[in-house]
Image 1: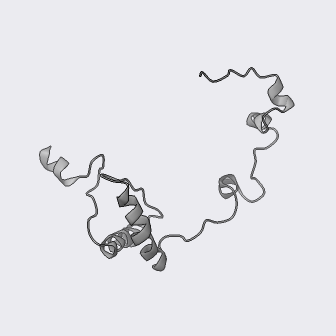
Image 2: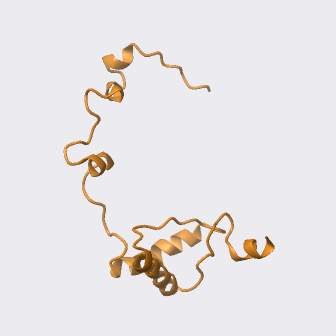
Length: 116
């Protein structure tokens, strides 16, 4: 167990990436090329500066290499999942009645104030 914990970062299943921004970008690029992943889940182990350094130093390198997006595609998440023109729940969906606070749909609902 000691060997396993010594090889992994705190709260991680993977060995931490350590090196220059170029080293980190090279490793992440190899993951993309070898496994066809389309994103990364990052976690910081010690300080928030690690994430700031990643954003400032590594992300631009990944963008130059074309493996990290520069912009998000237009549209809402719902449109990206269900297609153009479907940015809201269908009127027949039960959740559609909760669209606007204070609407007639909510007037029949009991609202419990937050505890102070």
